[in-house]
Length: 373
Image (tube, rainbow, N blue to C red):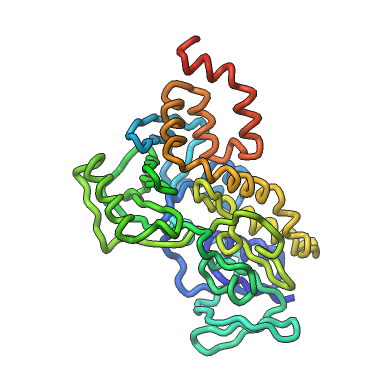
C-alpha cells in the first residue's frame, strides 16, 4: 500500500513521521512548510505527556504559568497554571516536526497539489508542476479549506468555521497569556507571548468576522492595554478554524481515505485549540493503519470526538455576554472556578465531566462566592 499525505501541518507531519518510522510507504505533499498560522501556539503538558516526539520542543518555546481573562465589561481575573503552557509559533513547530521527519527519511514532495482523482480505487494526485502521483490511500491534512475535503467528498466547512487573523507584535514580552472576551462576539482576542515577540489576534465565527473588525479590535486593545505598541499591518497571518456541530463517520473517513487535524475538523469549538487534536487524530489513524484496521479509525477517535461533541453542545451558551461576564466575576471570587477555567483551557478538565465536577463542588463554590472560609 502506498499512502499519500496532503498537507504538512502538525497532523500531516506527525502522521508521516509515525508511518515512515514503521516502514510504511508514504509521501508528504506540501509546498510551503514551514509556515505561520494565527493561533496562540499553546501546547499543553497533556500533549507533552502523550506524544514523545515533542520531548525536545520546550527549547523552542516560552513557558507560561499565568492567564489573564478579561470580560466584556472589562472585569479581569488572573489565574495561575499548575500545569504550565508551552507557547511556540506554528512556524517553529513546523520546523521542529520537519526535522523529526527528515531524520526518519520521510518522502517530502514540495509541490502544490491541485487535484485529486480516483480511478478504480487508485488515487491520482496532480501537482502544479504537471506531475501525477498514484496512491492506494489518501490522508487529508491540509486544513479546513484545503482541497482534500472537496475532492474526497467530505462535507465542506461553510458557516461552521471560525476565521482568524494574528499579528506579530515585536517587543511585547509578557509573562502571561491574555484572553479578552467581547460583547455579542462569538470568539475572543488573544495575547500569547513567544520567544521574540507576542502573537496578538482575534477570531470569531465566519459570518461575523472581517479583516477590518479583527484589525480594529486588536488596534483598540493594544491602545488600551499596551499603548507603547502598534500593529504592523504587513506582519499578519490568517486562517480558517473548522467546527463540527454533529460528528459522523463521513466527516473524517471514506473508502481508502481519511482526514486528520483541521482537515478532519479536530478543533475545540469553544477555544479553537487544535494542536493536541492534530497529533491525537494523526496517532489514531497511524495506529489503525499499522494494525491493518484502517476502517476502525473513527472508533479509535471516539474519546476525542466525545470531547469535541460535548464542547459543541456547550458552545451556544458559552460566548453569550452574560455568561463570560459571570464567568470572570465568579473566577475573581472563587479559587475553584479559577482552577476549572484554566484546566479547561489546558485540557486537564474534560468537557464530558464538567457538569458533574461543578455539581459536586457547588457547596464549595457557594462558600467561596460569599467569602466563607
